[in-house]
Length: 232
Ligand SMILES: [Fe+2]
Image 1 (spheres, protein in one colour):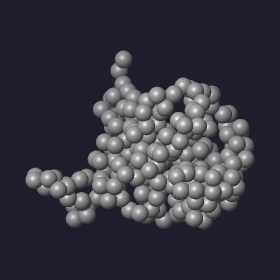
Image 2 (cartoon, protein in one colour):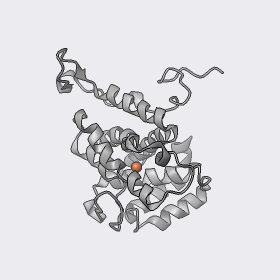
Image 3 (tube, rainbow, N blue to C red):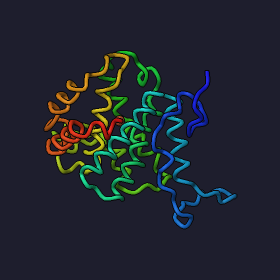
C-alpha cells in the first residue's frame, strides 16, 4: 500500500495531522537551553511534534482527535475575534491537551466499553499528568491552563479542580467546545458517532452544565452557518 508522504514521512497512522507544520517557530534568543553538556536547545515546534507522534503511536484516536480539536478551536477563535496570541496558544495547547493520556494504562485508555468509577477516576488524572509532562517546555501560562483545565465544567462539576463559570479561563472554555463536538462526531468503540444534527442538539443540551452557555450559542451559530468553510 502506498501512502502520501505527509509530515510524518508516510507512516499511515501518524499522517493527516493538519496544521502542525505551521506551529510557532521560537526565535533563537527565546529557545530554552537544555542543561546538558552539549548545550542543545529545546526546539518548541519539534518538541510538540515529537509529543504528538508519541501520543498518536500510543493511541491513534487521541492523536488525530487532538489535531482536529486544534483545527476546530482555531476556527472558533477566529470567529470570536480572539487575538493572534490567543490563537497561537490554542494551537500549541490544542495539540497537547490530551498528552497526559500517555500516562494512563492501556487497559483503561483503550478499553472498548464504558469505564468503571475507578477507571474513570484514573483517566481523569490526564490533565494533571499532561501539565507535568509539558513543564520543561516553558509554555505560556494560558497554554498550561488549557492542558490542565480543559475538562472543567461550567457548573463546577468538571475536573481536576472543580472550577466553575468565569473561574475557568476563556481559552479552556473555547477548546472544550471543540473537544466535546469532535468527540460526539467520532466513532468510539463503545458507541457510534452522533449524526450532525444530534451532535448540535447534544452540545446545546450541555450548555450551562458542562459548557459555557454564551460560547455554546456562538459555537452552534458558527458550525451551522459556516460549515462549508470549516469542514471543506
Ligand atoms: Fe482530555
